Length: 74
Image 1 (cartoon, rainbow, N blue to C red):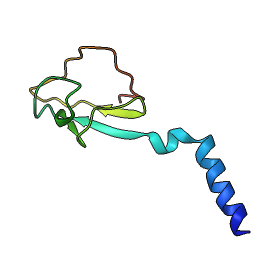
Image 2 (image 1 turned 90 degrees about the vertical axis):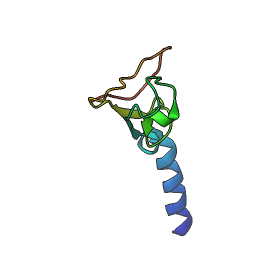
Image 3 (image 1 turned 30 degrees about the vertical axis):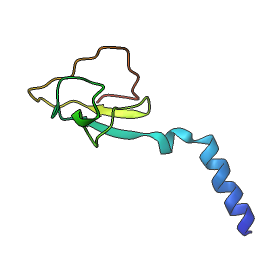
Image 4 (image 1 turned 135 degrees about the vertical axis):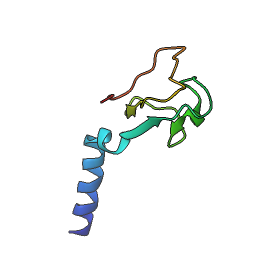
């Protein structure tokens, strides 16, 4: 029974990778206006295609120098 539970956990993880890959990134603009600067985000790190992005009203609004993919932006 123990092995079955382990295999079921592995199978679920393989079938639902987006559940574990999603994160939320909030723009702070603390460093600059550069989207690709990790220090402009909380938590620190540039959002990925699995990220939900929140951009509040701050003085340093993001400027994108390339195409980026995110999961959503509420």
